[in-house]
Image 1: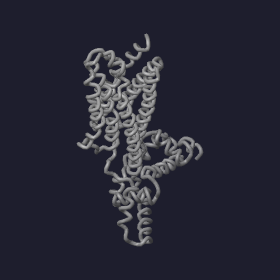
Image 2 (image 1 turned 180 degrees about the vertical axis):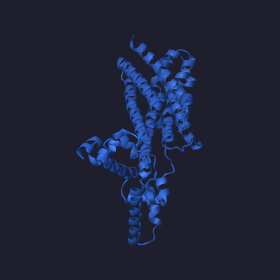
Image 3 (image 1 turned 120 degrees about the horizontal axis):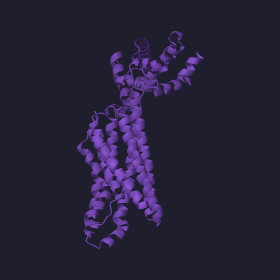
Image 4 (image 1 turned 60 degrees about the vertical axis):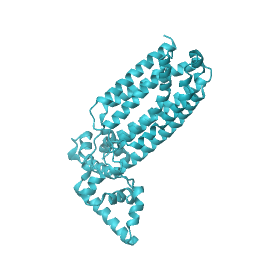
Length: 381
């Protein structure tokens, strides 16, 4: 099997797997249907893009398809960007303003129509030999690179904000959604860097190296798609969003400070009283035993406005709500591990008892506070 046959085989398998995953995402039952549909369309356009590995531009219909395929890739990153928003924020909905993401595709096709579609009546061989040297082709490739850079940076900024909001408002130690989306984005960045290098080889004159680079890109695309399928099947809980209307503490601090008209001493007395009340409530009522505790629920229990409680913990006590709650969980776990009468309890039983819901997150948090694993701490006590 030569390089072209291998490339076509990989391309066909990649397209099939991409469409299969899209079908799965369209049909699987989930609360976050919008995220699944956006991701499904992402894979459909990825399949269109990958079809270039095995479709020969022989007829006029195939030439038209090749031109559409070259521009359709401009849908991929906007769809991925919207997918990340839909996964991160449970209240995200598509709006008319999101049509602005179609602008690059529209602009490119307005350029392509006079520059390429009207030239299809020329000799086919002449057209194909000069296709990659057309100014319009240079334009679209440069636009794709700028578009990719814009969306990849935007996605990283979304994930950064999502992580901060999550840590400030939720006590569930599972951050699998953030980690998965971060992994996907890093994989896309790496894969696209390889594609960009491959495209440079197109103009280098090293055809053999360019063909092998295409084989590598096709293999990477197939591997990434299969990886997504395994993730979707084994980790359906990854789609967990937060409310996009939640504000970061740094964004509401000016509002809170502006509401304060009393003297600094009075403010400090109020803050110290609130901190004392909060710590007493945490020690006596142990709300941290609820694995899904949120700052909104704790604010309702302790009868403090959620905005004030967020500022109190995240700013005045200089802790994320996530860390604040986990500290109480770890302290209770330490007491259980030191209690000789509870030696029969396994580490797994203890972590569930104190409010954790996974062994990995418990071990990570425990070692962060004690520099020891739970087992090592029990043996040393």
